[in-house]
Image (cartoon, rainbow, N blue to C red):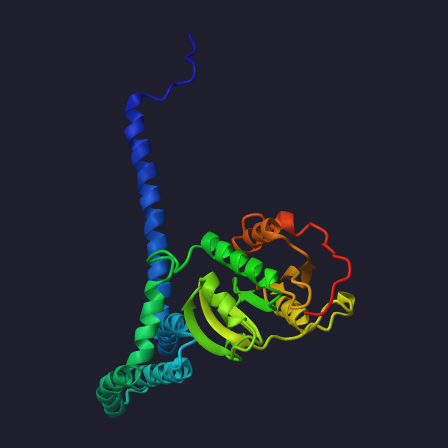
Length: 312
Protein backbone atom coordinates (compact mmCIF):
# COMPACT_ATOMS: atom_id res chain seq x y z
CA UNK A 1 0.00 0.00 0.00
CA UNK A 2 1.14 3.51 -0.75
CA UNK A 3 2.04 5.67 2.17
CA UNK A 4 0.36 9.03 2.64
CA UNK A 5 2.22 12.25 3.33
CA UNK A 6 4.55 11.92 6.28
CA UNK A 7 3.48 14.11 9.18
CA UNK A 8 6.07 16.16 10.97
CA UNK A 9 6.82 14.50 14.28
CA UNK A 10 7.19 16.20 17.62
CA UNK A 11 10.88 15.60 17.45
CA UNK A 12 11.19 18.07 14.58
CA UNK A 13 9.71 21.00 16.57
CA UNK A 14 12.70 21.84 18.78
CA UNK A 15 14.95 22.04 15.74
CA UNK A 16 12.52 24.41 13.96
CA UNK A 17 12.08 26.53 17.05
CA UNK A 18 15.81 26.67 17.53
CA UNK A 19 16.28 27.72 13.93
CA UNK A 20 13.69 30.46 14.38
CA UNK A 21 15.39 31.72 17.53
CA UNK A 22 18.70 31.65 15.79
CA UNK A 23 17.37 33.66 12.87
CA UNK A 24 15.80 36.19 15.21
CA UNK A 25 19.02 36.53 17.20
CA UNK A 26 20.97 36.90 13.98
CA UNK A 27 18.67 39.69 12.76
CA UNK A 28 18.87 41.42 16.16
CA UNK A 29 22.64 41.18 16.06
CA UNK A 30 22.72 42.70 12.60
CA UNK A 31 20.55 45.61 13.74
CA UNK A 32 22.79 46.17 16.76
CA UNK A 33 25.87 46.09 14.56
CA UNK A 34 24.29 48.58 12.18
CA UNK A 35 23.48 50.90 15.10
CA UNK A 36 27.03 50.63 16.43
CA UNK A 37 28.39 51.36 12.97
CA UNK A 38 26.24 54.48 12.66
CA UNK A 39 27.19 55.68 16.15
CA UNK A 40 30.88 55.07 15.41
CA UNK A 41 30.54 57.20 12.29
CA UNK A 42 28.89 59.96 14.31
CA UNK A 43 31.64 59.83 16.94
CA UNK A 44 34.23 60.09 14.22
CA UNK A 45 32.78 63.45 13.17
CA UNK A 46 33.94 65.76 15.96
CA UNK A 47 31.98 68.91 14.97
CA UNK A 48 28.73 66.93 14.95
CA UNK A 49 29.29 65.86 18.55
CA UNK A 50 29.98 69.46 19.48
CA UNK A 51 26.76 70.53 17.75
CA UNK A 52 24.73 67.96 19.69
CA UNK A 53 26.25 69.02 23.01
CA UNK A 54 25.74 72.72 22.32
CA UNK A 55 22.13 72.10 21.27
CA UNK A 56 21.36 70.30 24.52
CA UNK A 57 22.96 73.09 26.57
CA UNK A 58 21.03 75.69 24.56
CA UNK A 59 17.70 73.98 25.25
CA UNK A 60 18.42 73.81 28.98
CA UNK A 61 19.44 77.47 29.18
CA UNK A 62 16.51 78.57 27.02
CA UNK A 63 14.07 76.78 29.31
CA UNK A 64 15.46 78.62 32.33
CA UNK A 65 15.36 81.98 30.52
CA UNK A 66 11.67 81.43 29.76
CA UNK A 67 10.98 81.15 33.49
CA UNK A 68 13.09 84.24 34.18
CA UNK A 69 11.32 86.23 31.46
CA UNK A 70 9.93 89.46 32.85
CA UNK A 71 12.65 90.02 35.45
CA UNK A 72 15.09 92.89 35.18
CA UNK A 73 17.94 90.52 34.41
CA UNK A 74 16.20 88.65 31.60
CA UNK A 75 18.13 90.56 28.92
CA UNK A 76 21.44 89.94 30.70
CA UNK A 77 20.63 86.24 31.00
CA UNK A 78 20.08 86.02 27.25
CA UNK A 79 23.48 87.58 26.60
CA UNK A 80 25.14 85.27 29.10
CA UNK A 81 23.43 82.28 27.52
CA UNK A 82 25.06 83.10 24.19
CA UNK A 83 28.40 83.53 25.96
CA UNK A 84 28.08 80.12 27.62
CA UNK A 85 27.16 78.42 24.36
CA UNK A 86 30.07 80.04 22.52
CA UNK A 87 32.46 79.13 25.35
CA UNK A 88 31.39 75.49 25.39
CA UNK A 89 31.62 75.23 21.62
CA UNK A 90 35.05 76.87 21.59
CA UNK A 91 36.32 74.56 24.34
CA UNK A 92 35.11 71.42 22.61
CA UNK A 93 36.51 72.50 19.25
CA UNK A 94 39.85 73.57 20.72
CA UNK A 95 40.40 70.34 22.65
CA UNK A 96 38.45 67.66 20.81
CA UNK A 97 38.87 68.71 17.20
CA UNK A 98 41.80 71.11 16.81
CA UNK A 99 43.79 69.60 19.69
CA UNK A 100 44.68 73.03 21.14
CA UNK A 101 45.32 71.81 24.67
CA UNK A 102 46.63 75.11 26.12
CA UNK A 103 43.59 77.09 24.99
CA UNK A 104 41.33 74.34 26.25
CA UNK A 105 43.09 74.40 29.64
CA UNK A 106 42.73 78.19 29.85
CA UNK A 107 39.01 78.04 29.10
CA UNK A 108 38.54 75.22 31.61
CA UNK A 109 40.14 77.37 34.34
CA UNK A 110 38.31 80.61 33.52
CA UNK A 111 34.83 79.13 33.02
CA UNK A 112 34.14 78.06 36.66
CA UNK A 113 35.23 81.48 37.95
CA UNK A 114 32.98 83.19 35.41
CA UNK A 115 29.99 81.09 36.44
CA UNK A 116 30.59 81.94 40.09
CA UNK A 117 30.68 85.65 39.27
CA UNK A 118 27.47 85.34 37.26
CA UNK A 119 25.65 83.67 40.16
CA UNK A 120 26.75 86.43 42.54
CA UNK A 121 25.87 89.29 40.19
CA UNK A 122 22.49 87.93 39.10
CA UNK A 123 21.45 86.42 42.42
CA UNK A 124 18.16 88.43 42.67
CA UNK A 125 17.13 87.57 39.11
CA UNK A 126 18.03 83.90 39.56
CA UNK A 127 15.98 83.80 42.76
CA UNK A 128 12.96 85.26 40.98
CA UNK A 129 13.36 82.74 38.19
CA UNK A 130 13.46 79.85 40.65
CA UNK A 131 10.38 81.21 42.42
CA UNK A 132 8.50 81.29 39.13
CA UNK A 133 9.73 77.77 38.40
CA UNK A 134 8.34 76.56 41.73
CA UNK A 135 4.99 78.14 40.88
CA UNK A 136 4.66 76.24 37.60
CA UNK A 137 1.82 73.70 37.35
CA UNK A 138 4.25 70.76 37.28
CA UNK A 139 5.36 71.61 40.84
CA UNK A 140 2.17 72.87 42.39
CA UNK A 141 -1.05 74.76 41.91
CA UNK A 142 -1.22 78.08 40.11
CA UNK A 143 -1.22 81.25 42.23
CA UNK A 144 -4.92 81.61 41.69
CA UNK A 145 -7.39 79.13 40.31
CA UNK A 146 -8.85 80.13 36.95
CA UNK A 147 -12.42 79.86 38.17
CA UNK A 148 -11.67 82.06 41.18
CA UNK A 149 -10.01 84.61 38.92
CA UNK A 150 -13.16 84.78 36.81
CA UNK A 151 -15.26 85.46 39.92
CA UNK A 152 -12.94 88.28 41.04
CA UNK A 153 -12.83 89.98 37.62
CA UNK A 154 -16.61 89.77 37.22
CA UNK A 155 -17.16 91.25 40.68
CA UNK A 156 -14.81 94.14 39.91
CA UNK A 157 -16.46 94.82 36.53
CA UNK A 158 -19.95 94.89 38.04
CA UNK A 159 -18.81 97.32 40.75
CA UNK A 160 -17.12 99.60 38.21
CA UNK A 161 -20.16 99.43 35.92
CA UNK A 162 -22.52 100.57 38.68
CA UNK A 163 -20.35 103.59 39.46
CA UNK A 164 -19.66 104.37 35.76
CA UNK A 165 -15.90 104.04 36.13
CA UNK A 166 -14.10 103.10 32.91
CA UNK A 167 -11.82 100.08 33.02
CA UNK A 168 -9.88 97.74 30.74
CA UNK A 169 -8.61 94.28 31.70
CA UNK A 170 -6.33 92.11 29.54
CA UNK A 171 -6.06 88.45 30.57
CA UNK A 172 -3.16 86.46 29.17
CA UNK A 173 -3.74 82.99 27.76
CA UNK A 174 -1.12 81.12 25.69
CA UNK A 175 0.68 84.02 23.99
CA UNK A 176 2.81 86.22 26.23
CA UNK A 177 1.68 89.79 26.91
CA UNK A 178 5.12 90.91 28.10
CA UNK A 179 5.54 93.44 25.25
CA UNK A 180 2.53 95.34 26.61
CA UNK A 181 3.42 94.76 30.24
CA UNK A 182 6.65 96.63 29.54
CA UNK A 183 4.59 99.64 28.45
CA UNK A 184 2.97 99.98 31.86
CA UNK A 185 3.90 99.94 35.54
CA UNK A 186 4.82 96.51 36.89
CA UNK A 187 2.95 95.48 40.03
CA UNK A 188 3.04 91.67 40.46
CA UNK A 189 0.11 91.92 42.87
CA UNK A 190 -2.56 89.50 43.96
CA UNK A 191 -5.79 89.72 41.98
CA UNK A 192 -8.64 91.02 44.12
CA UNK A 193 -11.75 93.02 43.28
CA UNK A 194 -10.67 95.73 45.75
CA UNK A 195 -7.30 96.25 44.05
CA UNK A 196 -8.82 96.20 40.57
CA UNK A 197 -11.47 98.80 41.41
CA UNK A 198 -8.94 101.00 43.21
CA UNK A 199 -6.58 101.03 40.21
CA UNK A 200 -9.28 102.48 37.93
CA UNK A 201 -10.67 104.98 40.43
CA UNK A 202 -10.55 108.44 38.75
CA UNK A 203 -7.55 110.47 39.79
CA UNK A 204 -5.24 107.57 40.59
CA UNK A 205 -1.90 107.39 38.79
CA UNK A 206 -2.68 104.14 36.93
CA UNK A 207 -6.33 104.57 35.98
CA UNK A 208 -5.45 105.29 32.34
CA UNK A 209 -4.48 102.26 30.31
CA UNK A 210 -5.08 98.56 30.89
CA UNK A 211 -4.48 96.11 33.70
CA UNK A 212 -2.66 93.01 32.44
CA UNK A 213 -3.25 89.74 34.30
CA UNK A 214 -0.66 86.98 33.91
CA UNK A 215 -0.60 83.60 35.66
CA UNK A 216 -3.39 84.63 38.01
CA UNK A 217 -1.67 87.84 39.18
CA UNK A 218 -1.80 91.53 38.28
CA UNK A 219 1.38 91.86 36.23
CA UNK A 220 1.08 95.57 35.42
CA UNK A 221 -1.29 98.53 35.22
CA UNK A 222 -1.47 101.62 33.04
CA UNK A 223 -0.42 99.55 30.02
CA UNK A 224 -0.78 101.00 26.53
CA UNK A 225 -2.42 98.59 24.10
CA UNK A 226 -2.52 98.70 20.28
CA UNK A 227 -5.62 100.38 18.83
CA UNK A 228 -7.76 98.48 16.36
CA UNK A 229 -8.30 100.07 12.95
CA UNK A 230 -11.39 97.99 12.23
CA UNK A 231 -13.91 100.39 10.66
CA UNK A 232 -16.80 98.04 11.42
CA UNK A 233 -16.62 98.84 15.13
CA UNK A 234 -18.70 101.95 14.60
CA UNK A 235 -18.88 105.29 16.41
CA UNK A 236 -19.73 103.67 19.75
CA UNK A 237 -16.18 102.34 20.09
CA UNK A 238 -13.92 104.80 21.85
CA UNK A 239 -10.23 104.54 22.64
CA UNK A 240 -10.70 102.02 25.43
CA UNK A 241 -12.79 99.66 23.28
CA UNK A 242 -10.45 99.97 20.29
CA UNK A 243 -7.51 99.12 22.53
CA UNK A 244 -9.37 96.08 23.85
CA UNK A 245 -10.12 94.85 20.33
CA UNK A 246 -6.65 95.73 19.07
CA UNK A 247 -4.91 93.51 21.61
CA UNK A 248 -7.12 90.54 20.74
CA UNK A 249 -6.28 91.05 17.07
CA UNK A 250 -2.56 90.71 17.82
CA UNK A 251 -2.71 88.00 20.52
CA UNK A 252 -5.00 85.32 21.95
CA UNK A 253 -5.72 87.38 25.07
CA UNK A 254 -9.21 87.99 26.43
CA UNK A 255 -10.06 91.62 27.23
CA UNK A 256 -12.93 93.06 29.27
CA UNK A 257 -14.03 96.69 28.98
CA UNK A 258 -16.25 98.82 31.21
CA UNK A 259 -17.58 101.94 29.48
CA UNK A 260 -17.10 105.13 31.45
CA UNK A 261 -20.07 106.82 29.77
CA UNK A 262 -22.70 104.05 29.83
CA UNK A 263 -21.33 101.51 32.31
CA UNK A 264 -21.73 98.86 29.61
CA UNK A 265 -19.53 95.76 30.02
CA UNK A 266 -18.01 94.20 26.88
CA UNK A 267 -15.75 91.22 26.27
CA UNK A 268 -13.36 90.98 23.32
CA UNK A 269 -11.65 87.89 21.91
CA UNK A 270 -10.04 87.23 18.51
CA UNK A 271 -11.15 90.65 17.28
CA UNK A 272 -14.82 90.04 18.13
CA UNK A 273 -16.81 92.11 20.61
CA UNK A 274 -19.60 90.86 22.88
CA UNK A 275 -21.37 93.96 24.21
CA UNK A 276 -23.75 94.82 27.01
CA UNK A 277 -23.09 91.75 29.14
CA UNK A 278 -24.67 91.27 32.55
CA UNK A 279 -22.97 89.50 35.44
CA UNK A 280 -23.95 85.97 34.44
CA UNK A 281 -23.17 86.45 30.75
CA UNK A 282 -19.76 87.91 31.51
CA UNK A 283 -18.93 85.07 33.90
CA UNK A 284 -20.04 82.46 31.37
CA UNK A 285 -17.98 83.92 28.53
CA UNK A 286 -14.90 84.39 30.69
CA UNK A 287 -15.08 80.77 31.80
CA UNK A 288 -15.58 79.66 28.21
CA UNK A 289 -12.62 81.55 26.79
CA UNK A 290 -10.19 81.86 29.68
CA UNK A 291 -10.63 78.34 31.06
CA UNK A 292 -11.09 76.94 27.53
CA UNK A 293 -13.97 74.69 28.54
CA UNK A 294 -16.44 75.63 25.85
CA UNK A 295 -14.61 78.01 23.54
CA UNK A 296 -15.69 76.22 20.38
CA UNK A 297 -19.36 76.66 21.23
CA UNK A 298 -18.95 80.30 22.22
CA UNK A 299 -17.09 81.15 19.02
CA UNK A 300 -20.21 80.39 16.98
CA UNK A 301 -22.37 82.93 18.76
CA UNK A 302 -23.31 86.16 17.00
CA UNK A 303 -21.97 89.44 18.36
CA UNK A 304 -24.40 91.11 20.73
CA UNK A 305 -25.38 94.73 20.14
CA UNK A 306 -26.86 97.37 22.39
CA UNK A 307 -28.80 100.46 21.30
CA UNK A 308 -27.30 103.90 21.71
CA UNK A 309 -23.78 102.94 22.74
CA UNK A 310 -21.33 105.78 23.41
CA UNK A 311 -17.63 106.25 23.65
CA UNK A 312 -15.71 104.61 26.46
